[in-house]
Image (cartoon, rainbow, N blue to C red):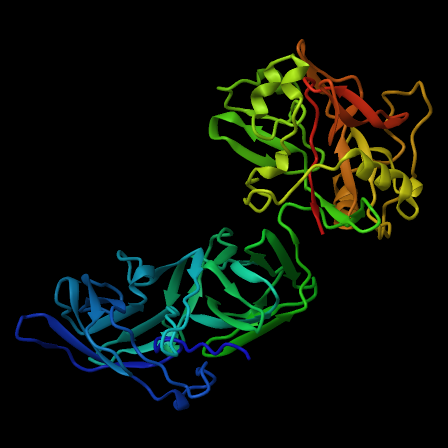
Length: 516
C-alpha cells in the first residue's frame, strides 16, 4: 500500500497574522492562523487536508514605513503548534512601521533585501512522524496593516515512485533555473519569481540512508512556479546499490509547475543501470551479461581516489611516468593485480605481481562509490565476448573518435544510430597508424555511445624505461599465468591478440565491468 505523507501547514496555505502585541517578557508575539484548506484550490496533499505548524518553524519579517524601503528585519519562531500558532521574536529588533514583508522558511530570506530569496540547490526528504512530515515550501507575504497573507512562491511536485530499489537521492535538471537567487514581486497578491542567472539548473533531493520504494513512496519537493513550462527536464533516481535510472522530457514537451497546485509525477517499471556505466549489455558467458564502465580506470595517490575517466576516449599518456607514492596527478596504467597497491608498478620484479587484487574491490568515486561493485574480466570472458556470443565477429573492430584510435565493441543488442555506420574488423597489416576504418566526430560518437557502443583507446603502456605508445592498446584481464605473467587483450589498427600475456610489472590500461 502506498505510503501516505502529510505536509506541514506551511505548504500552500494562507496565514493570517493578528496585530502584534508584547508578552510580559517584552518579546513580540504574533499569532498565525492557517486558513481552512478547503478554501484553497488543490492545496491539500493528505486526504483529510490537515496541515499544522511545527514547533521551531521560523519566518523573517521585514518592516518599514514605506512599501519599497525596509528599515529592519526580525526573525520569529513558533512557540506552539497546530493550525494556529504563536510566533515570538527570536532575533533582531521589534517589528515597527506600517508595512511588512515576510518570508518562509527563514533560511531562504536574503536578509539584506526584502524582495530577494535564495532557493537551495538541495532539499531533504523527511520521514513521516505521527502522520506528518516536515516540508518547507517557500512562501511570501506583504501587508500595509496588521494582516499578513502568505502566498506560495513555488509549486509542489509529488513524485510517486514504485520500484524494488532503496532510493537515497533524486537529481532534477532543466534548461531553466531551479535554484539560486531570485527576485520576488508581490504582484497584488500573486507573487512571482524572476532570475537573470543561467545557472542553478540542477536540484538534488537527498534521502539520507535511503527510502524503500517497493510498495510505492511519495516524495514531495518544490520547484519555482513555471506556467510556461520547463524544457529539457530530466529526473535521475539513485539507489543505495550503486545503480540509477533516468527519465527525460521529450524535446517537444514542457513540464508546467503551477502555484497552489499539486504537480504529480508517477514513475514505475524503471530500468536501473550502474552509476558510471555505458548503457549497453555485453555477454561474457552463456549466463552472464555485463556493463562496461564509462572510461578507463584512473587513480590519484595524493588523495587515494579511484575514478573512471570522464569519457571513453580519455587517457593520461606520458604523465604515467610520474607514478610514485607522492605524485598528486592521475595515472591510468597499472601493474597486474595492483588493486590494493596501485603504485607497486614502480618495481620491475615480476614476483611482486604473483597475486591478484582486483581494482574493482575499491570504491570508485564516480562508479557508485562502494567497494566491490566492479570487476575485471578474465581471459575466458574476453574470449566469449569476441568469439562466442551471437554475431560476435560483427560486433568489434578498430576505429577512431575525434582522431584517437582504439577498439570499438558493440553490445549484444545493437541498432546503428542515424548518421553513423560501423564496419567490423581491422585494416590491412602494414598500416599500423591507420585507424580510419570507423571514424566518428564527437556528435556521431555521442550517438554511438548512447546506443551502447564501447571504445577502448589505444592508450599505450609503461615499463621500467617509461611511457611508450607503439600504436597499441593493452588491457589487463584477471587471469594470472604464473611466473609473474598475466593475460591481456592487446590490439593495433591491423589486428588484436585477445590471448596475449605480459610481465606483471608492465603498466597497462584497465577497463572494469559490472554484472547485470
